[in-house]
Amino acid sequence: MTDPGGHSGGSSRPKNPLSRAWLFLKQVFDELRKVIVPTRRELLNYTAVVLVFVLIVIGIVSLLDWGLDNLSELVFGGGAGT
Image (cartoon, rainbow, N blue to C red):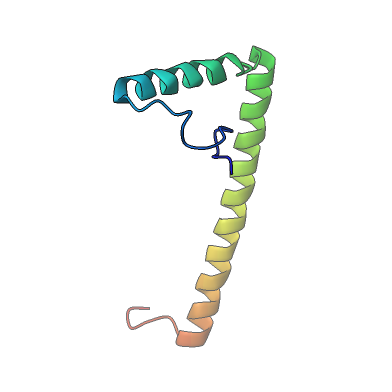
């Protein structure tokens, strides 16, 4: 059976905590080398997409809030102060 790291068996893992920490850090840096940093244009595009999506969700939630508020006033009345 293999563990999530792709190692077979438990014998290939170092026993020494410092060796394990060093192996972990080495694997972290190996993964960081694979990261692709977006260009400025891509970053601005992604930011714009996220902002538009957030504004759409805010609009949907606001409409639901307004509609449910009006529905609750219809069902339960306007309260004692109104």
